[in-house]
Image (cartoon, rainbow, N blue to C red; front, side, top):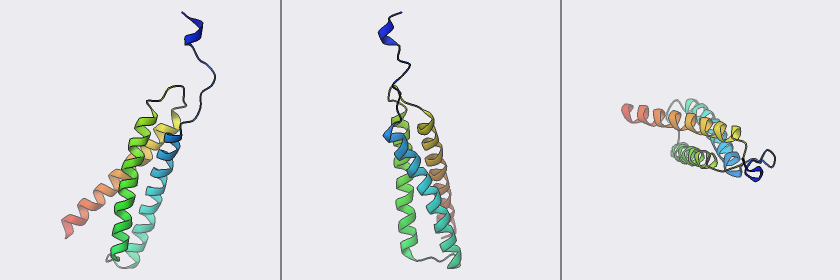
Length: 106
């Protein structure tokens, strides 16, 4: 075994993984806020609430993709990338289910 091939030090945190985690967390928090705003309007929130929801769904998809890309990097800590994938994935599913239920009621 060659000595130069093993690298025990020098790992770093991936920027893509951090962005993925933040995107998933922001999308989840925004969903909670949007749900509370919609509840305050009795389920008939203004159009802007729906637009923000669509942007947050796109943000969660972007976070999921960035988290998956961060896992392909070498010599990084993978925990944040996995957490980003989980939070973004959960928010994607929540937004998808919400939109399907909303279309079913329309």
